[in-house]
Length: 116
Image: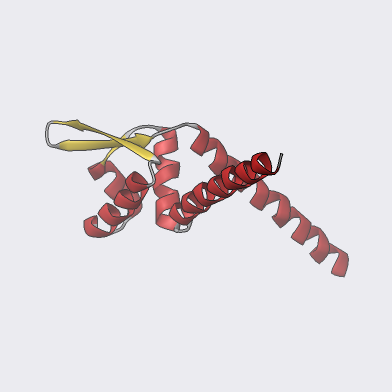
């Protein structure tokens, strides 16, 4: 039995490392904005640049991080590159984080109202 417990612990640790790497990729407002845009639909680089209001080199760096973490997929059509979410579950994660934020914001407002 001790071997099984150690194996479970290693699997759990691997999962924690995976989660941490995903959160590292999400630890930037611009990358979150990119993912939110891609949650809506597939977009070309030029369309992303119009929405992001950042330099092309900056956007390219953020897109490279998202690609390296396998959070986005690319498709090439002629000389245009299109990006999409690799898995729609990521959109649900972003929605869940929004819900989490709103729940805690409402708690803070209730505390403030109680101070009056």
